[in-house]
Length: 173
Image (cartoon, rainbow, N blue to C red; front, side):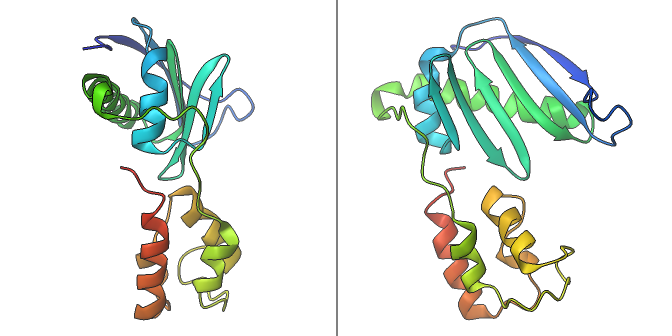
């Protein structure tokens, strides 16, 4: 096991002290930098840096960055959600590390879905049934992993299938 323990820090963003969401840092008691290229392969990192080592993800509308001794997560509801996500990441780090001989490390950002490719498959009616002001905004949320084809009520079955197939090329969860 590579990552055994951490200390969780929950805080409100300084720029928005009255915000309804919180952020967290998990201060890692062990250095996980050797596992970062493995995680990048397994989870499909949105960003990757060799120096200093870090990998970033956009998952379900949240930005997650894993550094050698710290994990940062934004837009959380509360400490319970923070703990759930950090525990999931701890399992992912340890599983990737345990399977390191079977994983080809990736030391660059993984390809990401393109907003315009997603938009091409949407009805482009700006109907707001998805809860977003425009299809473009909805497409951006889909590209970031916060929404999916099922969240667009007027999307027909054919384009929903095409969009699911397109997105499946980028999802490693």
